[in-house]
Image 1 (cartoon, rainbow, N blue to C red):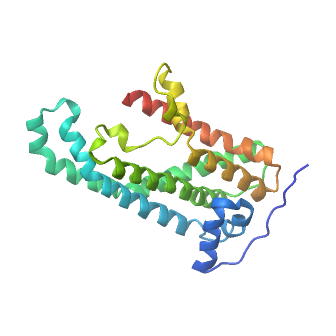
Image 2: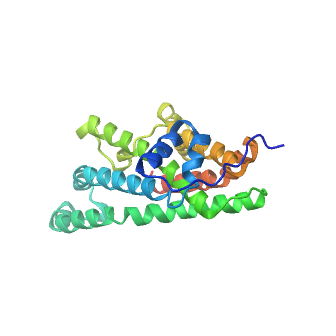
Image 3: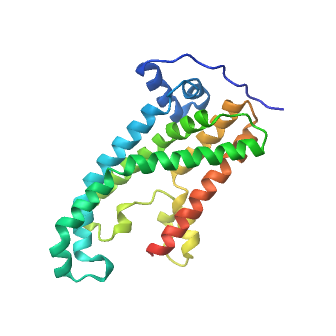
Length: 239
């Protein structure tokens, strides 16, 4: 038997009410559901996540360029890279501003996967509510992005590779020798932020659909499993 109930639809709220809902997603998934079910509730968290991510990526451009100068990409010589450095830097900055579109697309994909999972498990949910949930939970990922920037800033010139621009907050920090690449990537993937995100998403799904917590975790599983597979694939190409 389900141990949660479906919150009733809520009236539109001002920024103050939406801010409370956004803050609730970090510690109180049940309390966040009321805000998530409001019209356009996805907008503010998506805007905040986009702006913070763009700012962080722009701040990392100088470090990225320094690393690429030391290790020119695509088999270029140092001289070739120097001659094209202005164009490469411009392309990087332009690419940064595509981030909001990419982020929205990834959240929509995540919401679609959650909708499919809910349908299979007999859990009633709308795409709007799931997209709003994914947008709110993306704020947890934003915390990891900011934490990564702080680590890079603290290390300064110690950062020597592009991979180091994405610091690990997972168990991979403690295992670097005698471990396979896929297993190391798996340990890196399950950072405190990712685990936090999985727990919040799962509990919020349960409250949103009036289902058991077990069903909530089952419905969330395909989404983070896909993220894990993509993470392992990217790590394999980089190492």
